[in-house]
Image (spheres, rainbow, N blue to C red):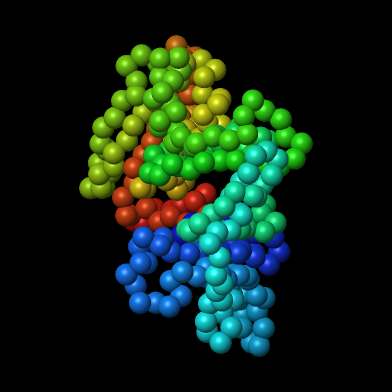
Length: 260
């Protein structure tokens, strides 16, 4: 899902480069004569033509064969700042997104706004992801870090950021459907580096697939006395809601609907 969900952000024709080579330790017993080669292709969107009503994605494969070449390694891994490339990649998969539209609010040092956004989108990240800032002209105390999911970040700083007796967790049953949840209440002013407008985020398999704005807690039926209203102004409640199959999620992970 993630590999295709990014296409619409890659420039006007959604171009993506994919280069891949199998781990030699895995391929050693294979009879495939190309097991030691790198395979590559380019994916792009083509406008509709010849009576076709919608655009389509196609990948480069002359005569229905993936192109390949031989090399011990490729110098595509990040080197020292500000060199985006230089260190060798001996095997694995390399994806390059061209003219990626990251958005104006995420163009600061990668360890700041983008880090926080990715942390929110993958609150229970299963595998480590390392982020490198290699764009020239950027400043910071560091230019690389390992991404931590939001749940880990909050737990690590719990004593300074979370109110006493939180987080709490439990199970909701709505129309016969069970949903697990965790609730966090931040101390005054401490939520800003973790969330912005998100009040309830919905996750499946460790990834955020949608959220409700914190204005949700001002809706009818959420009335509270004046003291609690003032408390809520200083404490932003964030709830991780683990959803089941009856929630319909979009590839872009910013839209969702519910099946009745």
